[in-house]
Image 1: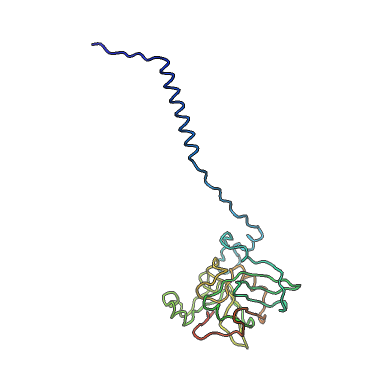
Image 2: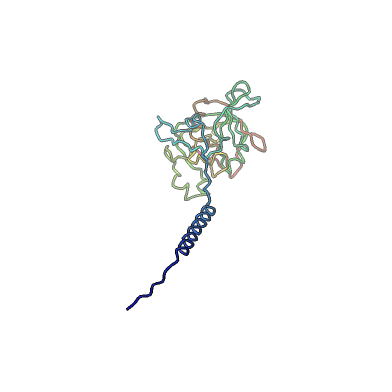
Length: 246
């Protein structure tokens, strides 16, 4: 038996090899052109001063977690600002529409805190009051109207909730009084710190927990509180809208 032998011209081999090489280069170039670079996301640089300000709080009966400031607009962070007012130093001015609380200082300055406001309470909380009582890690009791509005959420706490990290008043509460009587409005901490700057759920005036701890240490019982809202007037509660009881 004989086998057929087909000779291949060397020139043909060279041409085929050159063609395959060029095809390989073209494929590589096309692959490089079709690939896209992933955008580089720059992490915001947080000033260490604020990282310390909103870091974990130690020495407390319960854990106060640090804040992830990437989730909070810097305008809500505690800071000293120019503030022109006829109110005397030591007065608290609560500007509910702007979501700021000011502690008036000397020389036309104030310490400004970002706040959150309850949806219903934002409509009725206005006028003047005083800090009638202060409490560290207070108990909390939902009102009858809150239980009626959301029985599954608030019903289990009809007899009150013990202090702790799940307590809606947070680590501190300032109780507002008028004419010697409790108005049932409070300035307090929160279990929802990333809602600062908004009107959310029930509640009175809420601050980030690090901020309410700071404010609590600066404000004595008897301090004056002015609440700016519209329409202006005295601190009254509209029928049917009952604030949180601490």
